[in-house]
Image (cartoon, rainbow, N blue to C red; front, side, top):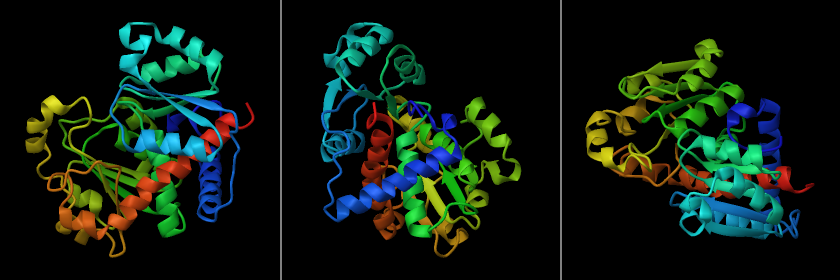
Length: 303
């Protein structure tokens, strides 16, 4: 494992190794055991999209690991004024030990990895959100003790979150059922991957079908960053794709609910369901820190 660009690149064994390391680092942090694995290391953190959880969790994570997270807004970098990604990659490789980027195009992340000589971490693109899904898998395993054999239901947009959920959950032996309107099709690369898993994967436009007997119900905002101009239209198109009491009655009685945040209560999820499962949702948010620390240690500790 040289980079974390998308979960399609990782094996089930590599994901399990990261989850086990995340559990260990979380235990050590909760028990006051220092783990300065990245003393003297610097992570360049490039942000072309707004962030709460990604920025704070990476910056705090680097600090807890003994290193330094360097916040770089694209508006303050030459990359924001047209400098080629390949040149930025080569320059940062001379200064820093790793790059984390939160941006729009997956191609930009791939180019940083291609032209740079240090590990690159995808903090989010329009195609994939691997760090979030590692935190989600960690949270599910904490609450359910296992992953294999569980059913995850995702209701909402065919976006970066659901792309990565499909890949990560299927690789870890889970069944995945996603419900989204037919007018919002999934990326062909994701569908081609999922089809290899046969009846472990289900794609439907009926949220009630997807939710039946689910162990985990997950959703995300209907209009992701970059889709704000479509927000009104999407509220109409996704009106029947809300996680509410009716949906939760179809899932298993002990089903958990996840949401990557921020949540728009009253749209993709009701306030009642959100608050009933707030403990799980904020465990998920916290686990961004621990899962990403595992990625950082894996990629940077021995470089």
